[in-house]
Image 1 (cartoon, rainbow, N blue to C red):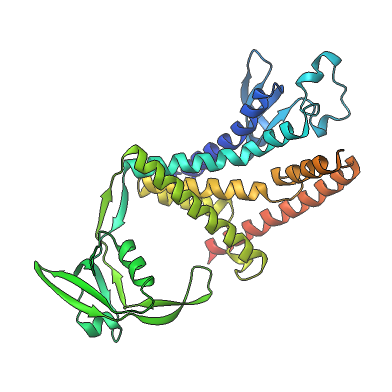
Image 2: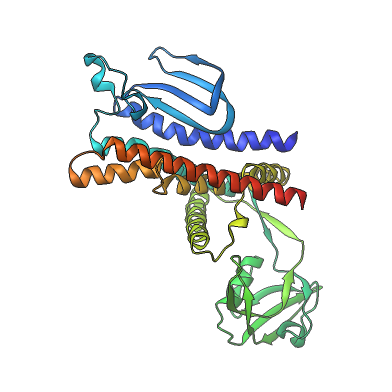
Length: 355
């Protein structure tokens, strides 16, 4: 029950943010919004405001939509002449581009906001304390033991395990002077990292300098000021975006197996787990899913935002819209691809559950 609740919270918030982008920019350009829906399918409930916009919740919580006056699916419905100025179709190509682009853009903005909040409420960092030592590797040979705290590498103060790991990885195998605190006794050891071939997160074999230690379970919670949190939130959002784009490319080039694609069940499971780990973990997870949603919607697949944006770019270049026949055929192909992807992701989710 808890997992279901947090899955609905995560999906509901991210869908709302995405559709809010379309809604606000459409309203900014004077386009009349007919429906703002969270979810697809049968309407469960809602209300209508004074401008005529109907806000509703629908039965299938795997998406949402903003329906505007004069969209393509209403092409056969005549619009009164006095209402043409409020139609999406009568806006110039760059205004329509901005309205459609606003959905993914709001997902990226939300990620920065969520990560900023996470860094403000406190993020757990592993301490630079040794949890285990690999026999035969440079650290063990030099005398590092479980429980040792690494305080300096050369003249650089080490405050976290991530900082320690990054310093070793950028050493290129050069000798490093470690300052060790062992139960209050401070001493130094020279360790020469060993360059080994290991698998990265995509399963590719890459070479990294390693010394053969892993972190303990001890962590500290670090809080940041609003300005510093904003800086870190923007930086982390950029890293997540790079990682997501790289992952998609490696899926396309078959470096990563399509069996790794997750669907709604995987998102639901992870939403429950991260919520149980605290607010900052949940905010990190929501930011990652929001970035994934933004990038996926920008792919040039008809029926997605990216497909519409692609058609608008062609229209801007050639000076006239892409024919309705081409758009119709492309939309059907895009729908088929999207359904295939959803079925594949659901299959992967079920395989993980039963495995």
